[in-house]
Image 1 (cartoon, rainbow, N blue to C red):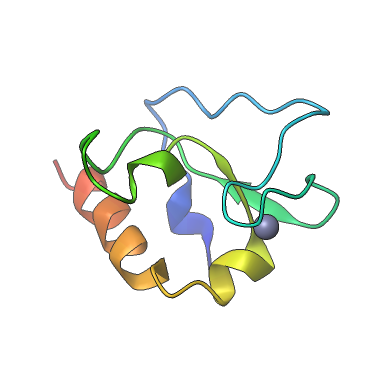
Image 2: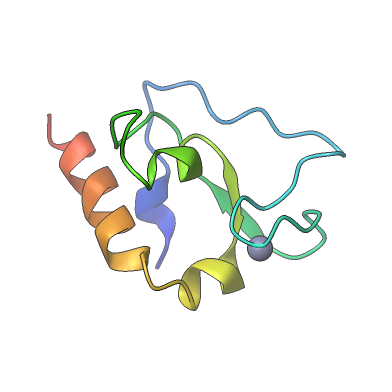
Length: 78
Ligand SMILES: [Zn+2]
C-alpha cells in the first residue's frame, strides 16, 4: 500500500497537465502518487522528490524508496 504518502494538514503538490514524474521526468500518463509536505531538508539529496508527483511504478523500482518512505513516516509522527 502506498497510501501512507497522503497526509492531511499539508498542501498537496500542485499537479497540472505539464507535471512530470520527478524520478523519470516523463509525463503523468501512468498511475502516480504525490507527497505533501517536505520530509527532507533542502540540502538532502531526496529533497527534490518532496511535494512532487512520482509514478507508482517508478517508486516501486526506486533504490531510495525505503529511505524516502521512512522520511515521510517520521514526518507524520512529528
Ligand atoms: Zn516516473
